[in-house]
Image 1 (cartoon, rainbow over the protein chains, first blue to last red):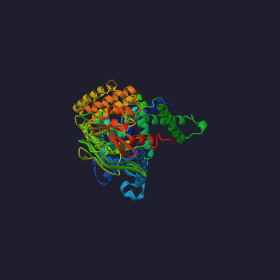
Image 2 (cartoon, rainbow over the protein chains, first blue to last red; image 1 turned 90 degrees about the vertical axis):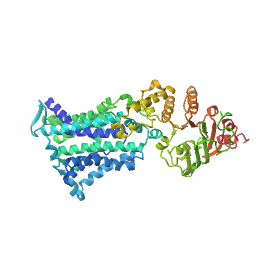
Image 3 (cartoon, one colour; image 1 turned 30 degrees about the vertical axis):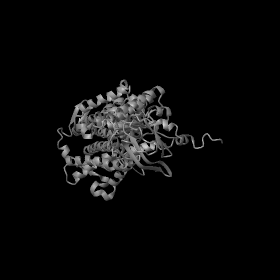
Image 4 (cartoon, rainbow over the protein chains, first blue to last red; image 1 turned 180 degrees about the vertical axis):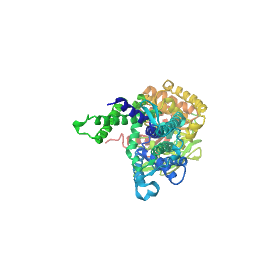
Length: 330
Length: 275
């Protein structure tokens, strides 16, 4: 059992492209849920809108950059479409509509009648060459020190991804400290009170939903570009719940929370993945008759236990304020 | 109390009577919930620069009337206007921007905002509240001015030392004060208080009464819902009485306290009779 290897498997996954994409997507969800109090249970739909918007634009002959803009716009537009009928109603309706729209979009994208557009179950591949043409590193070469090593391709996507996360943090930080952020938080606390003070509650909720959706869409586009592949199977509802775990573990309604949450989540996932597979190979589980698949399943149990421990000891999340959490609705 | 120089001197004590300088005029407002008619008022005028108490037994439609007038509920029929401008069908947030601000029977403090942030939220001129305005414009100068005004209000309501605490950590009475300070930050012409004294200890009641009188003296118009007749007697210029959705009496407090219709509404028509 090489603990250094296992540890670095976790670290590299956390800092890698997927970690960055999760962080970016969680920044969007945090704007909606953490600050705006919107129960969006279909954040994966926004990521899907971004990924497919990008890939389809390129597939139809547009450039990748246009595709990314189209993807982000699709995310915002989806927020508009979902928000207009639901945001005047009680919070639960948004939850119901978003969770079903996420599934509807995934099932439609994989059905055969839209195959000319979405590629059906096969998806769309190799649409991001323009992005990788800009890669200043040689794709196969290894960069780093000791065990902290990225391949050139992954390094490029990670750097771009974390730069986008930085921009996302900057925008969130500026917005939340501004009077706009104050109104959005007030709407989360009590809509009627905000209304009685002359705030157009519906409009603020719509803005938060659309902006968060645009961040989700950009994250979806980033994931798709990294894999040079969009496929309906990458957009299952569990992605939304991973993102909720990330936001809550990091600290909902904090600026840096989603990023810390994404790093923690990815680290735990790959740390335990690496741990379980090497433990299985060394025959630790022979007494139980575990094969490699079983070991991978147990990994998720361990991640779950780890997250539960975090919540038990820091219910406000890693960066949340305990005082703020305890206030609730007294 | 209505005194000799009161603007309401000489106004007859009849339900729906016209006032010399009304800020709010309501005509034929009606709202029913299924078979129950919650509010059905033919005519009601509220005199400018006065304190008007709205009283009535439980279920009389007082809060419903507040909700209708402030856009929090939709009337089935009716017209009402503020300074001659129609308010019907206007959403609640725009009613507030037109200068009519209400508070709530169950206090709605924004728990996870600080006391200062609660009050700053009342400012209506902050362009930084727009998404693009917040991101790209410089809203700090305006914010500083508003903070100055908010701090004056907090000082006036004895909340200044709690300025940076979460509103959720205040006591019930302090929240009532905060809600009033926040409403004043909007700079309303007409302020509608829904049971501002409910659940507040007697010492604080006195200070709230003082604040409400000060509002009138600052040139604002106040309507407030209240159950405690001593409070109503003490500060009202005029009292309007609702029972089962209807306006059954209005007049100065001394008149109302002796009015048989009002006593009947509260105690039932056959009170005092031999059984």
